Amino acid sequence: MGQGLNTKVAQVCAKVLGIPMELISVKPNMNVVNPNGSATGGSLGSDMCSMAAKKACEQLSDRLRPFMADGKAWLDVIKDANKANVNLTVHYLQTPVPTPYNVFVLAAAEVELDVLTGEYRFNRVDMYEDAGQSLSPWVDVGQVEGAFVMGMGLHLFEEYRYDPDTGRKLTDSAWSYFVPSSKDIPTDFRVKLLKNNYNPVGVFNSKATGEPPLCVTFSCLSALRQAVAAARKDAGKVNWTQLDAPSTVESVQTACQLSVDMFVLS
Image (cartoon, rainbow, N blue to C red; front, side, top):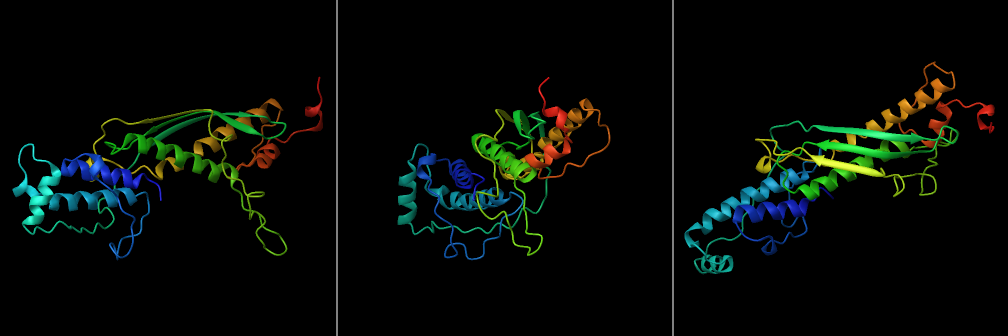
């Protein structure tokens, strides 16, 4: 379900057990092995799974400590523990993180607007995300980018429309309901993670990254509002106009309140 969950869990296990990532495999989740797993929300899926894996690996390490020696291969440790009838299976149930924490993110968006058609493009977006001490920086950067683009759909493109007489949804297919595409992604998209921030309640001081960047996509809507306001000012219109989300091409063009003479070449 995203969040780079399998990668982060594997990295946590490798770190706690002190073994290479190649020796870690993450199996699909099912109620046979996890009958009462908690639902994920608020980007806590990777936090909860990584914390559970960390606790389980710590228990396993305690069991294996008598069989460990300097330079002893991991497989030999497991073989010796198995011969001694050591239980090599560990379960740990992690409920949602009991201590909440704040995630900070900063974004700036630059938009270019064609006031005649209402079409727009984002020439550049800069983001600065607080991921604590990131478990996996490449994964987190990808999550930040993906969440931001998803938020662009929420704030800019994905509009519900209904038949005023029957109430039937009209935006029920790819022909009428528009999600962000490759042409909608910012031309220059720059994402940075805040370095070495401390989060005492996170897994190895990390923070979740899945949803917070979506919120700052409001910067795109704010940039569009400023562009529309600038266009209206140039046209001599200084009264207030409403521009809600999703700010589709039609709503942006309407907000500019064009006149016929604006379509004539001079």
